[in-house]
Every structure is written in structure tokens, then in C-alpha cells.
Image: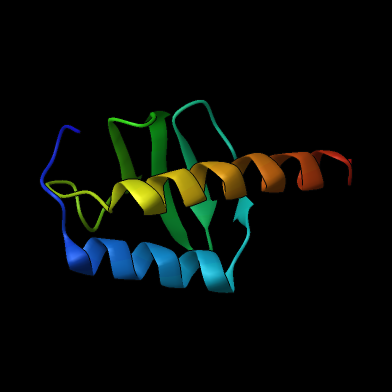
Length: 80
């Protein structure tokens, strides 16, 4: 992991995942609600892009995020 664990980062990312789906996918980021999430360096440096650049969520949250991201990509791909 590239950055130190942050309980606040972890809590916020989990809350966003509970309330929103990933959208606006690029090679580097995806949106979760109105928050841009860095996804490019999974699993080493992922998470809240603008708010928490010097911290990371827990490993468990990173795994949850990756599974949700894959599910939301497929779900949104099927809509096109």
C-alpha cells in the first residue's frame, strides 16, 4: 500500500459505495456520486481522489470497491 490507512477515508468511501453506483469511467478514475475516485493503481493507491490524496481506505474496503466497480461497469455497459 502506498499511503497510510485512514479511518475517515475508509468510512467515507464505504458510505459513498452504500449510496451510489460508479459512473463516468475512465482508465484512471470513476465517479461515485459526485466524487472522483482514483482506480488506476489498484490495489496500491486507490480511493478518494481530491479529498484524501495522502491516505487510503482499508484493504477490505479496497476489495469491496473493486468488486463494486466491476459490477457497476457491467451494469452500465448493458444499458448502452
